[in-house]
Length: 156
Length: 80
Image 1 (cartoon, rainbow over the protein chains, first blue to last red):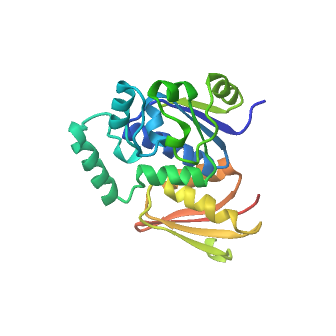
Image 2 (cartoon, rainbow over the protein chains, first blue to last red; image 1 turned 120 degrees about the vertical axis):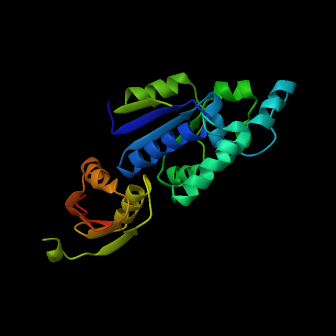
């Protein structure tokens, strides 16, 4: 049955796209919608702690590359981190909420953050390496069930 | 007309940009009793479109919204 709900796949680990995802999520929650964000692949970086992860060589390499939400760069013009610094500076000057603040707000508003179990396996991330506010990891069937009952579905 | 409405809470949203005005508004209205009126004062021109849209989506009553110089003032009544 359709509910007043928004379901989102957060695939991207880019600063700009994650901002869009969290702005839509907080806006929807503030308007009384139930919101589920399903984090998969690069998106997992948005709900990860800044800790060493991985077991294998490649897994450890990924762990070094993907730190946490504060270290994500924009999808364009990152220039090895200069772009991230520039955007953060510009956003601060204009008093726009930072990505980590948007995520805190989403959590406060009751947005459900669901990690994708399969991506966690691939990236060698265990649940204790994710922020404690995440829901139980799940798979495609969970997302599809939520999406089927939602008024709005997005892939970011 | 706006002057005749009794305001229960004044919400200072100056300097805030999307999505903060509606997030703060939704948090503030939660703690108020039914019938209470919030006056919001913002500087983000986006609220002219977003506050009416928020009111429609959340089912609250928008009494008025107007620009006064560089500020945008609106009145919202909690009806649910």
